[in-house]
Image (cartoon, rainbow, N blue to C red):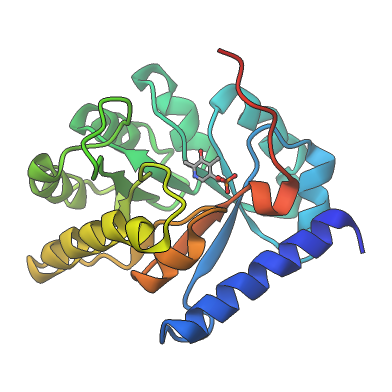
Length: 231
Ligand SMILES: *Cc1c(COP(=O)(O)O)cnc(C)c1O
């Protein structure tokens, strides 16, 4: 087995164990492999193990990979910050976008989704911790944005996503996820048909699954730690 195959299997085991430990149905958490900075050959190693869903953060990096892997019929998730001049390519080349955080971006994606493709699956990114450095809508603005996106015919509003502050303490990791789950429940009680809670990465996927994640986005645990970002 390649190292990537082994690490992917370990992540699948972590997910299955967390489902069991926290009373979640087996198979209720989808794994999206986060492939920023990964080569096409690393992605192919995961494909060889049956992984179909991949997440990318940067459009310029993603487009050549998507093109090269076109015949594999993969599911591509855009998970990075969205500049509004990039929406056309995102709408044309991705199946999901997890990082919609403002009306203008949603409107552009809705207008630019090619007519021959099904509606683009969308999660709204919420800045649950209120950190200045994080993108995401505020919890206060969320309801209005969600209602507007739910009306857009070329978008399919699926759920919420957040990137919590780093914390190595398990109970502390759970808190922002619990807060997001609460907002998700409120929107559902308000009549929106949401089925996706996109929370959890390498270091906090158990906490996310404990708090109701339906989709985790995992990179480092599968592909190895990335070199620290240049300043
Ligand atoms: C990089 C990234 C991930 C994966 O993080 P890891 O710590 O490598 O598992 C998930 N979500 C987003 C938005 C990311 O940028």
